[in-house]
Length: 360
Image: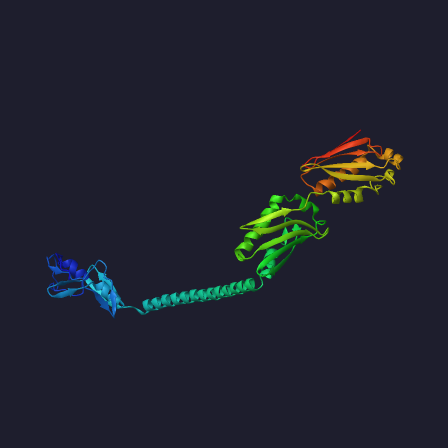
């Protein structure tokens, strides 16, 4: 039990205490001896925090804060300083109504928040069920699960549309990636080996996370030529990638001959039936060399009529432009020769696409 003494003035005690033994109507100051015993206040079964105005005992009477007790009993307390009167009244109907309205508003707010929480719980439970279902599908049908992921993430990668087939056997996974390279020659040729390796490693990382016990291997295939371009397989904790696609310009040669090797009267009627054979070779890294061989043994007059003309320039510009579209960023150089092998003109398309022709 804690005990202490304090000296207070009578005026201060009368202003804040419920019970007073000071003579009625007395004024002025009076020294008193008060005892503190860590007194608690309980109103309707609830302990009230008195804060700094701790109750005390004086002349065998217990003094407590009048405002604290009155408000705990749902009363309104006022102090009339002019008359030194503590006024205690019941709350008015309007005050009660205001408090009830505030409580009702609080109840409505809590009810609304509760409904939001309930909706969130339903949404989270739905998400949990979906994740459980997905996990079950992953475990029961890993091939379908991986295929769905690949189509979602990489159905079109670097402007190339791919098809994915995954086969599962005894927990191991084999992936076949297919596309028609004839439709995406330019896009495929722009891809470096490093970029393809990074892409396959992204897929491998996903497979490792989702199927840590599975072996993994696969291929990238060209459906047009029925060729395997790339193969890959799990090797320890890494993916081993092998490229079979040595750069070949056969497709470009074929296209150039189909488009610009004959039927050239659209450039000028003087081309007549003139024919040319166009050859493409790898001159250096990121550089193509094109040889245009004009059949002057059969069409000497036609060639004499069109060489070193604007029509012939347009023809050569179109050849360079087509090759550049297929191998953007490459330096394209070449020459035109007659059937005897004599150079008729040289041409160049820079890696930025700037073209020029020099006639001999």
